[in-house]
Image (cartoon, rainbow, N blue to C red; front, side):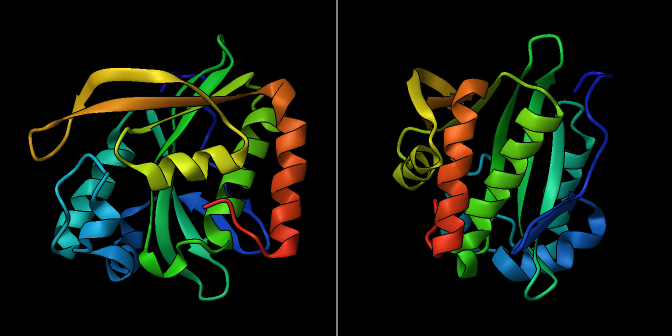
Length: 201
């Protein structure tokens, strides 16, 4: 990211805490999803089969100047259960991307993803002052697309043959976005879903 990238910050809700990703999170993260083919199916890295391999995946995220990665801590257990990131922040253009997200299977369709996205979106729109947040996902990853839609994001289009997968095949990238004037309605909807015990993914 640029020199104007926001400094790493911890974001805390009722169910999760997002804190800067560090090498110390690797043991928890490997316990949550190491070697799980389904968790890593759509992540553009080979499936980490050992804690050391997962540590290298985390190290690459941490070292990427265009990425601000967070470990997702489940407050009920105090354990890291996933990772989510800001990418390509631009203060000048008032935009960023949310991506690089994965969670251990034990927290799928729980409050974890819903609240993580609520915290990231609130920080982006209300504290960083961005006007646009975007998401990109594999055109075959219907689970991710449906979760993004449930956040209140709008489909923008599909970029064909946009990225090579780890197996050498090519993916089309499906783009979604949310604008700042759409955020208040999305915030109310996501907060309501959390209060009612429903989830967005």
